[in-house]
Image (cartoon, rainbow, N blue to C red; front, side, top):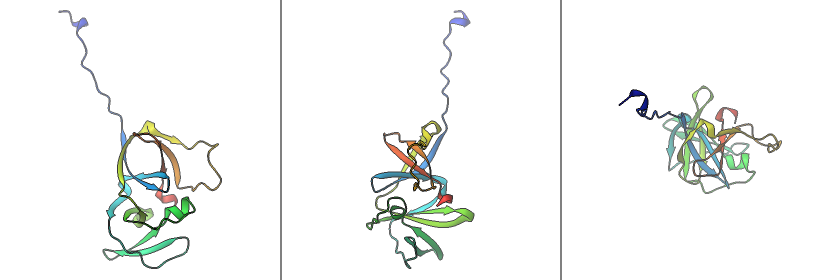
Length: 149
């Protein structure tokens, strides 16, 4: 058989995917880079109430600031929190994000990330919301840059 008629082996091209931790807040879905997440705690007890819906807690002899994203982003207060996403932010400080449901892992290719349309951006859209993601199962997810909280 002549070489030029042989079929070429299919070469699979790898599409780079980013791993994210996704969670529900109100009716919206949010995601953060998995590399920023240290752990997810099921039981946690916040302490001192601070201004701007922020609290403190101690975990493994470390102070962790908690931020209520529902108050910050949705201007409402969810109170039924069962999980805490412990993340690192600037200079390796710890930040806790209380959520009501167990966070999920998302694997999303770079082509699924998109800038937020300029027409959509209201003046009070938090600067931490950097992009939107077209989720694999459908719907939009807001991608958060924790350093901009």
